[in-house]
Length: 174
Image 1 (cartoon, rainbow, N blue to C red):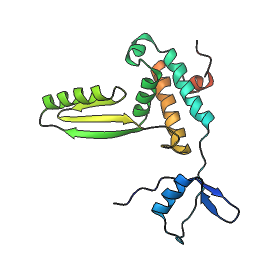
Image 2: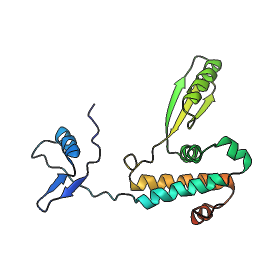
Image 3: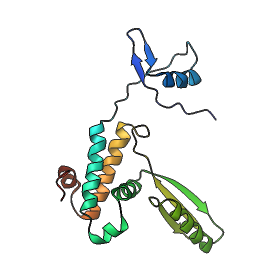
């Protein structure tokens, strides 16, 4: 199995592209041979403003949760990760057990290890869903925008407001 090459930031030098730092030079040296021809495709970076806006949306929504939801989501982070999972931005691991009772026991253990995950039991199968990271390194602009919109829609539905209202009212929550 070949190593996955991470996106390497390059800087235009006037006569060619060079890795942005010595760290990225080492990564490039590991994955590419001198003289090897590769296509360089521009990738638009997502804005830090958009990143911050999403966290503000989730924070505002969390502060206005109805009591029954506030008990379920003790932090804005818990709400954000739940929304990511429900919007389909999750890694899923399934464990097949010998019985439904065994599956229930395993689900209890798994759920206790990661309070931000969702653990489901269907007969003798345990499904463990963990929210994908939205860090700048983990998600490009397009994936982040889709995950941001998906989170917004999930949270807006939970609190009974249109997603556009939630987005437009960032910073106005009491």
